[in-house]
Structure formats: structure tokens, C-alpha cells
Length: 315
Image (cartoon, rainbow, N blue to C red):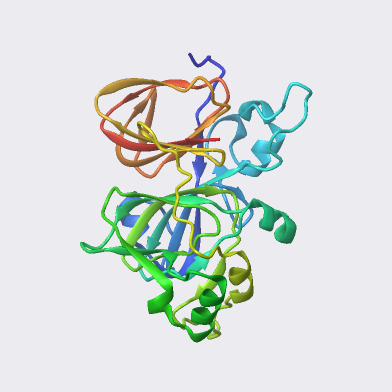
């Protein structure tokens, strides 16, 4: 059981302006968004410099998650038996994305390519669909059989040949490993868990311009370099029971809590949790929709009370 010195660490999310965003997250999750600003992403649990979370409570109030992770490694069991750091940087990033308009068609590098070219992690991610159109779709994968065919269709902008679309529905889970072409389409909202990386290569962006009137950059050379052809369709998610993902990158657990239930995750270094729907209590602390928090090392047993949908992640 958790001990008396353990403390729930609540986090303040970062809100990211995007051309394709809106103000919908304010109404959906009661987030205090910047006014009159198209917010596309709420980075709920993040130690990435492009969207940092900050501690809201307790003795570490005001610290960024990056500072907390480096200054208090014991909270994350981040030292091995010899006293060496296990993870140099906080490895996970969770978001809610509000695709009021379609996102660019994109691809992310794997760890090997990202480390060599950007000195950072690659980006494997996954989506849990919170909202979508009745006949909603996402872009996931491509139809090219060879790299030459891929490059030909890419150069000619033959997207109707190249891109693969799949139907989606609310509460659907989609795993998007690195090196996989993908894109959210308009009027889709998702919860996303990913590696802590912000490297994106755009293949197509619908001819959109940024705030200065310039076409946004594309990264066709990089995308062509890393894409697999033919497309890799096997999943690495390894989901089972209420685990949506259980692999080397991260674990993601969907909890639908009703009434009072006890949970135990004995082999974890820490847990990060986001409340996606409902309100309730964790042990003796109130939690509500839109909140995210960390249960530090040693706090791996807890009791939930109330009707809630939560996402629990760790690695």
C-alpha cells in the first residue's frame, strides 16, 4: 500500500496554439485556455520544452515536470542499483488533440533515426478517440508497394493513390508506431500517449499558410528516407485485458471505474493518470474530468470512488 509520505502530484497542462485548433477544449474539459486563440493540443503530462507541465500542489509546487524529474529521481525510481540515471529525460507525453480542421499528413522517426539526427527520442504514439464524425476517418498508412512507387506518387501529389484511410468511431483505440504515415481529419478529438518527442515530418498540409502568410514547411526528403514500403501493418501494441498498449515504449491502461474499486500495479516505478470523464475520489483526494496527476514511486495501490474514465500510463 502507499505510505503516508507519498503525495499525488497534480500537473498544470500546456496549451498549444495550432492553425487547426479551436476553443473546444475549454468547454469539453473546463480548461482555462488563452482567449480568442485556436488551441489544438493540451499537453497534460509533459516534460518537453515545447509544452511543459508544472506542479500545482504540495512541496514541489511551481516546479516544471522536467525539473522535478531531474531533482527528485527517487519519486520516479530513476536510479539503478549503482546510482546511475535510468532515463535522462521524462520519457512520456500525454495530450488531448482537438482537430477542428485536419492535421497535416505526417510521419515520425524511430529512436535510431531521431537520436542520430535530432539527439532525442523517436515518436511512437497512440490515440483513443474521444469524438469524431458519424462516418469519421483517419489517415493511417499508405498503399505504395515499393519506395520508387512511394516517391513517384509523393512527387506528383497523388494522395488519392498514396494514402490509406480507415473508419473510426468513438472509444476506438489506434496504435501508431514510428515510421507510419498518419493524420487526424477535421472534427476529431483524441487522447494521445506518445514518447516524449516533438519531431514531425510533414508530407502534405492542404496548402495552408502560417500566421505570417507563408506556406508551412514540408519535409519530403526526411519522410521518404524513413518510410517503409511496402507499409508495415503489424501492430506492436500487444494489448490485453484493460491494457491498450503493453510494450517497450509504454503501457496504457483504460480504467472505467464504477462505484468503489481498488487497483494495484506493483511493478511500476511511477504512474501518470488522466481523468477523461466523470468526477470522483482517489483515496481521500477529489479528482475531476480534465485533471492529470502523477503517483510517485511507492504509490502503486489506490482506491477509486465514482464513475470515471481514466487513462493510466507508465513505462
